[in-house]
Image 1 (tube, rainbow over the protein chains, first blue to last red):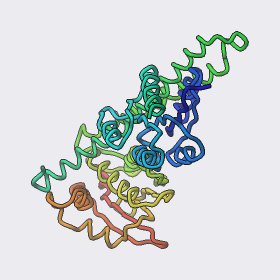
Image 2 (spheres, each protein chain N blue to C red):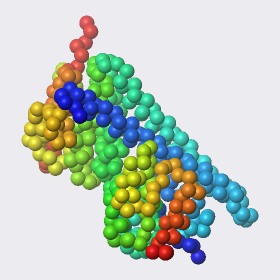
Image 3 (cartoon, each protein chain N blue to C red):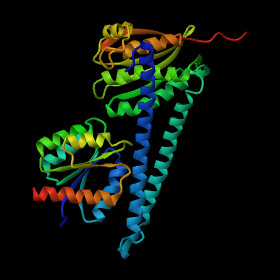
Image 4 (tube, rainbow over the protein chains, first blue to last red):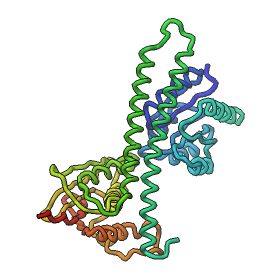
Length: 125
Length: 240
């Protein structure tokens, strides 16, 4: 059984597909959504310890999705993905309650470490 | 803080440069992220201990195709960035208005996608030769397209058309936005101020820059709540 469940949210389908497969190969239970609305619907149906969330998506922005997750799923930790060169969006996200942020392209080992840490805080409360 | 209208115009133009550069570099980051994960996954699959279906040729082929596609996408984005940067080389050149509008629509596409607005273009079948400042022309056309996108509800259409009308070459931006044509006219004719709210003078500044390009702006209210902003520029006189 997987240690924790991850919801991966990004509008770049090939990114989502390759990263999901890499995480699955590492024994992590992963589901994906291609936009914010789909992600919020998925969270209603199932509990995830960690959400990996792209900041810049068509429709609901990542920061808006983050706000909604923080208010309706306080036990879910959110790690933001930003394509921006600066850290401004990531810091803004942390101010809104994100657990942490990563800048694209991501280092998988760094992402795994952050996800593990985020899931641990969920389990220990 | 800009103190004069000229300074404010300059700040807006620099802001436009920054906005386009940030959007394109963000897109490149996305392509790099896909390449990064695809290469990583190829490595993972080749190290996997599954003798039955090893090596997984079909998946590896898919991933290689994806990488090729993302490299091409990156090259297209860099080309756009390069063309945009070169628009600042000279302040007066011979250009084709159709090409400038195509370039602007491509630059604005990502902003439309993020707001889930359908951006369409319809170009005159003939080239529309014009002598103008390529950067400021891009800036002005982009500004009006951006206004239309930002005023449009989700899934609405913003259409950009070019045509020759007598001695004038025209760019028409049509939207079904929430702002009335009268309000657009009022904002265009306002005196730009360096002091008001942020963004308050944007249309007035665009009108001013259009004027420096010898252009005029017409605003029409079409059927069914359509707004049409028509930019007209004088076609150069034919050399006899």
